[in-house]
Amino acid sequence: MKDKIWLSSPHMGTSEQKYVQEAFETNWIAPLGPHVNGFEQDLQKYTGVAHAAVLSSGTAALHLALIEVGVGRGDYVLCQSFTFCGSSNPISYIGAHAVFVDSETETWNLDPKIVEAVLTVAQNPALAAKHPQIPVLPQMPKAVIAVDLYGVPAQLETLKEICARFNVALIEDAAEALGASHRGVACGAWGDLGVLSFNGNKIITTSGGGALISNRREYIDRARFLATQARDEAPHYQHSAIGYNYRMSNVCAAIGRGQMEVLDERVQARRANFNRYVDYFTKWNSKGFAIQFQPQLEGDFANRWLSCIWLNPAENKGISRETIREGLAADNIEARPLWKPMHMQPVHEGAQLVSNEPVGTLPICEKLFANGLCLPSGSNLTDVDFKRIFEVLDGIFKSA
Image 1 (cartoon, helix red, strand yellow):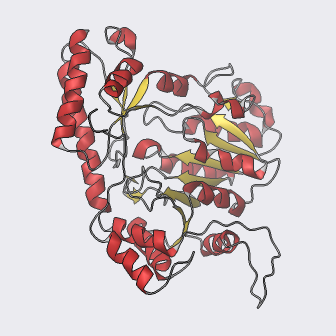
Image 2 (image 1 turned 135 degrees about the vertical axis):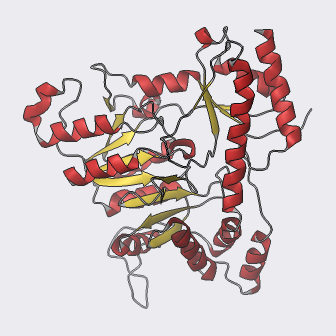
Image 3 (image 1 turned 30 degrees about the vertical axis):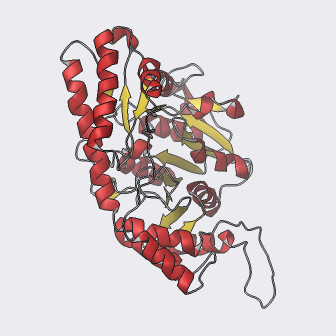
């Protein structure tokens, strides 16, 4: 069997082992230590955000973010449906209610117009008649979670203005977008709190891990406290609040410090992958096919963590997302459907949905899932890998 070409595999640099070795030599094999502090400082410098706490996962970071902005049991949180479950599961951890919002076509991310309409009606139910497709929530949502999907920035400036006007917290899930920017400001820096991920498939990795970033010190100080089991200052173990075991280890942070040194190179490689796919599919689009790519706002900088395409079989001579995925899989090449929206997941059956349609569907993200595909996008892909990928794709399109 041919060697596997992965969707997005870890890609180490040259300094990670040096930092890890230093952790062993100094016996800092603990969930705290100098590399934790150093990694946090690296992230602060890179994103321009004043404060950072590195944690065990991006999901843990989002859980703490919700707690920090005051979300509690029974509260409502607006969250884009078209995302990974790590964006929405923390809402359930708290016992709050997720209200799943449809995407827009400009970036495939959270639709600001729908968010604005939901908050308008929640603040003044008398306006519900002007927005017949918008449900009247029992109370004002406490937070909005916006995701920078596949490394493409959401309409963050607009969302920030809307949330500020309604005094609702904005949490930016930039787990897939480290190295991307919107209006010249780093992704992760737009919300009251930003979430990053260093899972094994992300643009840089600590094997697992994440971070919570914010310009408000009190948020990050409190998050660190809660992430270390909420241990009070005392000579014995004392706890006045429920805490969590969410801190990153010094060894994982050491890997992260080495990865930060090559982050810009990884972004450059991912963007080069995307451009390579664009060039490749231009050939087939000129022959009557219609392969579309995830768009971005003019002037934004996407890190293109994953290169994503969308194709309607009716416009592509019967070729579907699955035709391509299965063809690549037959050659031991991994590709993956776009995220299955959260409102379509069994665990969220019956959740409140909001779109531009007066029915209980989210048509934009449902359409994206039905026909969208993530192509191999690792920063360690070689010319030989791309030759193999394109040979398989050529066979699929020629057969049509």
